[in-house]
Amino acid sequence: MPAEDAACVGLTTAAGYAVVGKANLHEFAFGVTSDNPHFGLVANPLDSSRFAGGSSGGSAAALAGGLADAALGTDSAGSVRIPAACCGVVGFKPTHGRVPTDGVFPLAPSFDVVGPMGRTVADCVALHRALDPTVEPNSMELTDVRVGLAWLDRADPLVRARVDEAASRFTASETIELPGSEAVDNAFRREAANVHRTLWAEHRERYGEDVRMKLERCFAVTDEEYEAAVQARTAYADAWRDAVDGYDVVLTPTVPCVAPPASLGERGVRDQLLRFTDPVSAVGCPALALPCGTAEDGLPASLQIVGQRDADGLVLGVGLGLEADREPELP
Image (cartoon, rainbow, N blue to C red; front, side, top):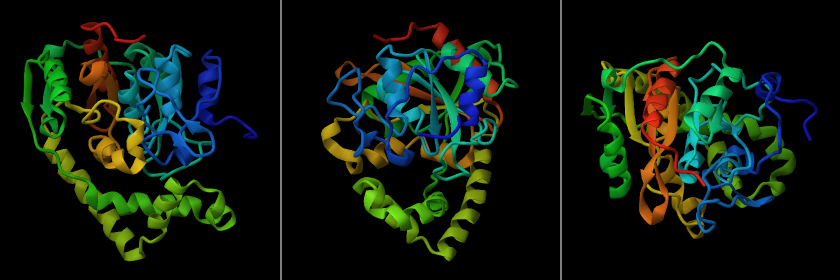
């Protein structure tokens, strides 16, 4: 039990939200499945044989199951957007640094953000006003938005088809190439190692196997590898800016598939689910995940709307515009 609320919780309760419960999540928010060895697997309300996604899987499941109108999540590499995609709800990752993370147990501080989740974009916007009252959604016509499309060829065919349908609502859209962020990974790993170094020394045996294996890899990052990754991150941010220059937003699938079967395990789905969310976190840009129609086995596909840094209002405004054209597919 924490001694006090995190700053983000205080902001939401001060705005009039009532806390109806705490949700399960991936251990230490370090994973994409929310299969927690201490508290069990978060069930996906859309299909209990599927992962709810992670790390904020309990928040997404509570929304999809009708237990709450809005929820908080954390996102360091996709932990708001991935579960939102798997459960057919909406999740927003603000620009890094805009929402206070005081009182939130960190994963990798220069990647970590707190973000709102909701059953609709409007619910996300309402909660985000409490977290960052300086941001208001831009009011604009979708036909005026300049859109770059990326990574569709790396998604499953039905997911790609749903994202294509969403993209057709924009007049000015074209396919672009975005750089990969693999060279940045060791920066994330070293930050996670630094967070856990003392706790690991005292309680290593209490960590679940999944997170323990990841942290062992994090502790193995050398000083030279970390310094190279920090430099690579700067170069990556420059390459990203060049790639998106001239576009208001970039549209991608949030994840390349529908919620995967839980039988596959974390290692069987981790790289796949992080494919399109992790690069956005590396540059700290705002991104919104929202359902965009039914794909495989009646499960939802999800669209990711990515903006330039600090263009949070534009991303939310585009999300509201797309939502106005489609009724949310929720139970």
